[in-house]
Structure formats: structure tokens, C-alpha cells
Length: 317
Ligand SMILES: Cc1ncc(C[n+]2csc(CCOP(=O)(O)OP(=O)(O)O)c2C)c(N)n1
Ligand code: SF4
Ligand SMILES: [Mg+2]
Image (cartoon, rainbow, N blue to C red; front, side, top):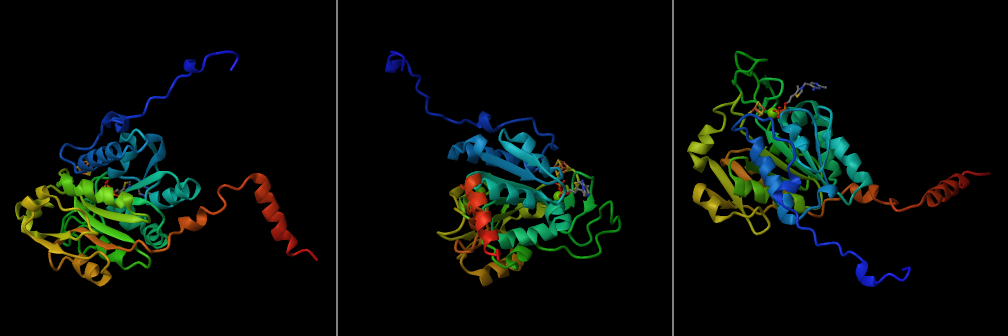
């Protein structure tokens, strides 16, 4: 220590992250766009859980919602249309220590990204996937998406969409090895926050469909649900999404659903009982592909070369 006193050493102060530590550019989304609410929820969650920004990555595709990484002061990857899931899987396979969130739109995930969606659910890597479902292509100005309701006019179908939509919950629950499937609404901040929180805490791929307002191109889309809140069925269970008093006061239709019950979750996903809000299915025992890709990450170059040599030696004469 060159004779210097120990008390010259500077002690690092304990870190206390505040909201500003997660805020970046001013969002360019339209006023009233549901994307603002999700951004606020994730920033608050990161602050509340004190997630270090340098250990957080937001990966998105292309779309209005996919501008999300620009607005978080964390690492981010504004990727290619339909490809956030393979990008995020790649990030996680090398850096399983990071908190990786995926932001994807209904066009991004359910149209051009469908194949990646299916295989990502099956691979069940430890990702939090937020599907911003506004039922339309927002960024490219009102083309039909696979979730646009039957008969809804759009720029690709001015006379109304001629074929009924796919239901992202039913599709996801139909894929082998699904491990966490939930639905929430951008206009109920309590439920939105609690859903993203539990999705983040889940070890495996947590798929959250967020019914998202797009006042610019789908002005009246969710009005009915907002005016008559009994159309929503809130799912409650000790293993499900927390239902706080603020949610109870707004939604009169609350029912118990055990998220371990896949058949029950699939039935609720159809919407026959009302629009489900909560955790439809959770299986913490589903195998995770990242448990395999993580193997050997700590090996040195010498270890890897020795391993390769040993493999090649097996074929030596
Ligand atoms: C390969 C490719 N095809 C098409 C596009 C054009 N494009 C950009 S965003 C988009 C749709 C976005 O809709 P969605 O994913 O629902 O996001 P939103 O804007 O509604 O949030 C399309 C078709 C593109 N950028 N790249
Ligand atoms: S077009 Fe729709 S989805 Fe895009 S920013 Fe505006 S309100 Fe949001
Ligand atoms: Mg969309």
C-alpha cells in the first residue's frame, strides 16, 4: 500500500436506482397510445426491483411498439421485423445472467414472426415476452394483422377483413412446452404491473398478451370492454396474478382459476366465458432450452480446445 493509510480508500456508496435511471428518449407514440402505459409499468418495475440497467436488455422487432428499447435507458436491440425472439434467445444463450425482455407487436409476432413464436414457446428460454396486441399494423398505417377482428375495415381490406382472427392465447397454449401464458390490459396499471412482475419472476418463457389501445387506427376497439367491465373475467388464484382491491373495484366478474389446469386455461382462452385477464397457465417444471445452452459457458479456450481434441481422438485410427 506504499505506506498509505487504509482510510484513504473510497467506499462505493450503495446504489439506489430511481425512475430516471430507466428513462431515455421521449416516446414518439401518439397521445393515448397504450404503449406509454406499458413503458411506465416496466420502468417502475425495474426501479422497484432495483434491476441494474446494465443487466437489462429489451429486444424488439419492428413496429410502433418495437420502438420500446429506445425509451429504456438499458441495453436494447431494435431488431428486424418478426425476429426479436431469435435475437433474444441468442442474447440469453450467451448471457443467461441478464434480464431479457422481448417487445413484439401482433404483426411482428403473429404474422411474419409466427415460426419464431412457435419455436420460442417450445424452447421455453428464460425470457419475458410482451405481445402488444392492438389488432392492427400501427407503424405502417392500418393494414390488417392476423388479430384484426372479422369485418374490421383496414387499408388492406377496405371492405372489412374477410377471415376471422387467430387468438394468440389459444395458439400459445396449443404449443408443446408452453410454461407461462397470461393476458392483461394496458388501461389497468395495477394488473398490468403485477402481470409483468410475475412474468419476469417466472423461470422460463413468460408470454404476456397485452390488449393495447391504438387510438389512431383502432379508435373504438376496446371501448366496449371499458364501458362494460363485466365482459372481462379476472382470474384469481394464489399461484396466479395478484388481484388488488383497485382491480376488484373495477371488474365485477372475478373467478378462481388454477393456472396448473391446462384444459381450463385453454377453455378460458377461447373467450366463451368473457375476456380473460390473468394467468391462464403456468408450468414451472417445463424444460428450458437455456439450461442446455448455458452448459460450458465458463470453459476457457484451452478447455474448449482440449474438449475438441478429445472428440476428434475418438475417430482416430
Ligand atoms: C421484412 C419486413 N417486412 C415488412 C416490414 C414493414 N413493417 C414494418 S412494421 C410492420 C407491422 C407492424 O405491426 P405490429 O407488429 O402489429 O406493430 P405495431 O406498429 O402495431 O405496434 C410492417 C408490416 C418491415 N419493416 N420488414
Ligand atoms: S399508430 Fe397506434 S400503435 Fe402506433 S403510436 Fe399511434 S396509437 Fe400507438
Ligand atoms: Mg399491432
